[in-house]
Image (cartoon, rainbow, N blue to C red; front, top):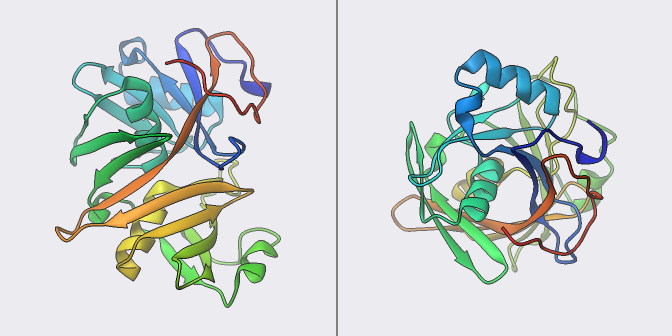
Length: 238
């Protein structure tokens, strides 16, 4: 589906946009999940859409959502939940693993979650940001890789790229990955300002209770049968 030409009832968001409103990771949101009642039908639609994740809203008032990649169902994922929190404008999202708390703060949408809910990631540190940027693709190996380096350690600024390395999904690199950012923030024990992919921005803040806040900008890129340029910079009313 080129240029976000999607069926009616599906919104496309860009989550973790940069300061200029560009980039961010595309997310499909199925506003009424009842039209796809089982995992098989949800996987078919997720593969058809081709985004790294698609979220199905099962109860828009309670915030009950279900997250799928083109290859599997996820118990937790960062950018789908930040996007859903922005779109539904709720303070709590319900997942099987637990409740995710959300808040709006100016241009940023934040979620609070536990790092142990995130799928495992290999966090591989590089010597500098230039090495991360120079990677021609996923380094050899298996498993989900988050390649990162300090841009400014004192300021908590990080350069990162994410490689799912999951065969068959057709997704070589993930533009912006909230779960991996959360794991890195928990691992380092400090707040981070992460530039990932082509220029997406992810903010994190660990809390004393072991949770981590993850935040970023969200823009509506397309609704239903409409089209929108991937780099549109203006927000659209929810």
